[in-house]
Image 1 (cartoon, helix red, strand yellow):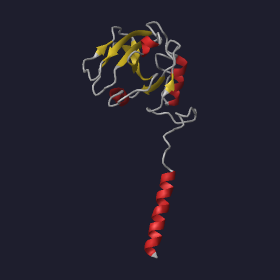
Image 2: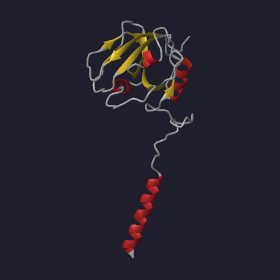
Image 3: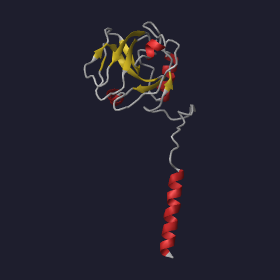
Image 4: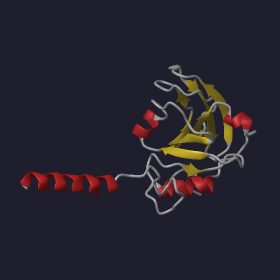
Length: 178
């Protein structure tokens, strides 16, 4: 009798635990704005009027990891790197197998330049401008396919909202201070 009770109780506990597992569709993916935002959350931020879903790399560890170890990146998705001060930037592709493009933006949110990044290339691809405050990595060819060229603007209001959802202070940031 005791053995049957233990088996029954164990099965009941497993049933409860199975019911508590995530479904794979979090609030952010479902488009609900009350979802907690984190480094894995994608935000809709247009560039040159073209829709793009971007993850935000804000902390040093997020920026260092970037898109490393991923096998793919969905269409019209990417990663945005935000820096505290404008300067010349350089990115490399250590442990990154996805062919990417990188767009470098200045402190006004204007696209200054686009460069190709090659899988596993550990040579830095540097900006020519020393005024870079934002970098956006996308699948190779996204900028060209969407006719987004230097001079295009990133949607700063959407970026500011995404930063607030990530609980990132924007008041003193060069993009948002007057």
